[in-house]
Image (cartoon, rainbow, N blue to C red):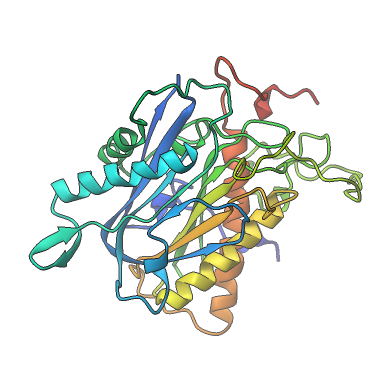
Length: 339
């Protein structure tokens, strides 16, 4: 039985098919960079797994299973390298203005872990003066958050790139036979390539549903990959990174959420070659709302993990497939490549 006959995409095929999540994008076309905010309607169980060698993060340590905080209020994915971590402060300011946050000593402190990718050298104007714009972009993204949002050259994917083509912001969802949903959101700025060799075919093709990223399948014959892998020229430490969120409405504790993040990293390996390199800051946040009431156990946890990997691979390909051209681009979009 094929995967597509058992699983199907959600109604939006977006992260927000998991009820209780909203997503907003904000970007600056001159800057060629932007921010994506993921807001939770209620404090959400979350975890993180970092497998890249050059990560940039904020407040990830509080997600460990042994730490006090049970749930977080939002997550942020941003461009801008370390400057982009300011975006979380903008999202935090928005949440505080609407009364959200962890209550302590009579005050509410919104908890907003964040991760960034490197897009400083992508041809955009980064001469922003004394203060980087990411805090404002974070506030704008949080204000814009809703059930529908753009893919491709939007939000954190605005200035993203891969070895051969522009990267972008991707998302996908999967409805499981249990009635639960698994969904992914990813900003693809990988050192490696999402495409097989020199073809237009995506590595993630075996997981594709309903021709969501072109319907080309895998190339035939499949070219050998026993060669030096594709990569961006002259990689620099922190010069790449794929950052993502995997979410579900299953009931998981923080340990279970971390295992879901580990499984979602398999989606990176299915969709990008190479991945998790010394020059990538590859990271997956996991979030479990518990809204379905489903508590997976045994073989059900295996299916949940497999769905996480497949959904993440699809989201990566969708982000690259949806990228659009802009003045000053250093790489072509997938849609502009010649067969």
